Image (tube, rainbow, N blue to C red; front, side, top):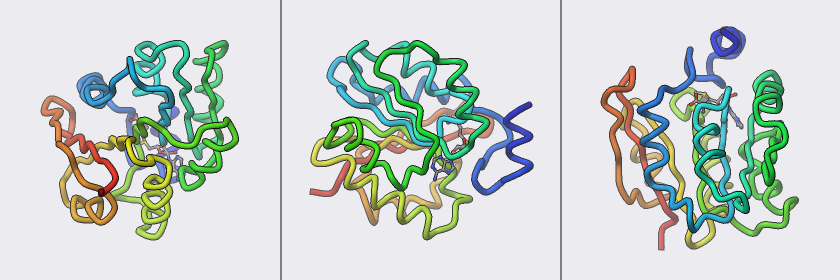
Length: 184
Ligand SMILES: C[S@@+](CC[C@H](N)C(=O)[O-])C[C@H]1O[C@@H](n2cnc3c(N)ncnc32)[C@H](O)[C@@H]1O
């Protein structure tokens, strides 16, 4: 219910009427090498669909930085995830990811897992987020995001190389998971 209420208040920023389902969550985790990741960032965790799996599957030493612009969702996440080591819940903007990484002493993220609604966000906001994401990934990081259509593929390709696309066909609606890296 909290998700639907927040959507009604701000449809363009929330971008969906309900949290992501299990199949999409499972597929979003496939590209992540949890044994090797030292720093994982999540953009737009919402009520924590992907976050729960990230928390369970990461090594205890892996830092997990959640960046969520919605105050109510941040409150829910804090209740859900209290006492988790190396977990930072930031009520902030994905545009400022480099600033948050620096604050915790990291120069890049190994993975940025995104639930952001790029289809409904204003183009200039998406541009700023993707520019910051490029910087935050450094030479080796991966950017993982889902899209219900591939209409934005060219838009992402302005910033990144798409290494592969996974499909969550049982998700409603079916979703594509794009795995991206900085251009060489
Ligand atoms: C479609 S919901 C996804 C929530 C969750 N990841 C899921 O899949 O169920 C998008 C989320 O992105 C957040 N969001 C939108 N713009 C943002 C921004 N610039 N920075 C951080 N979070 C943002 C919204 O508040 C919302 O929680």
